[in-house]
Length: 142
Image (cartoon, rainbow, N blue to C red):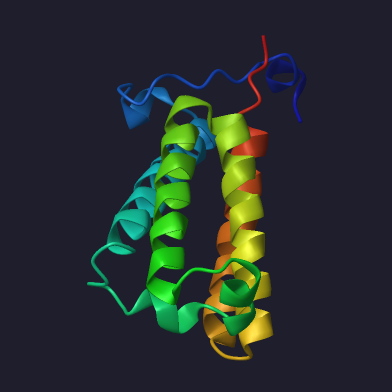
């Protein structure tokens, strides 16, 4: 790191700032924040409609043994949690991204217990790492 850049502090402008005005870390922050707001909200909404896939098929039977709900009713709860998590990322990205990371960890455990969809579990692990990166990028330096 050069002496000129050593004293430079990152400031992440609002979403409305142009990409040209942001450095690489600011652009990464904006992309990750957008992803972790939009994806949980859309996936959460789809839990009510099953348009992208039939979500109850991704639920380990032990989940409905612990929480006495039908698989679809369980998915309604999951959908609400995902929507709230996405909105939390919009409002407080540092903490919201940690909530999303923990949620993704729970999804991964569910898929491993289910014994299927290992490809989805691996994808969700990548998303978990991205959520942790967003949390780190969200730390503002004064």
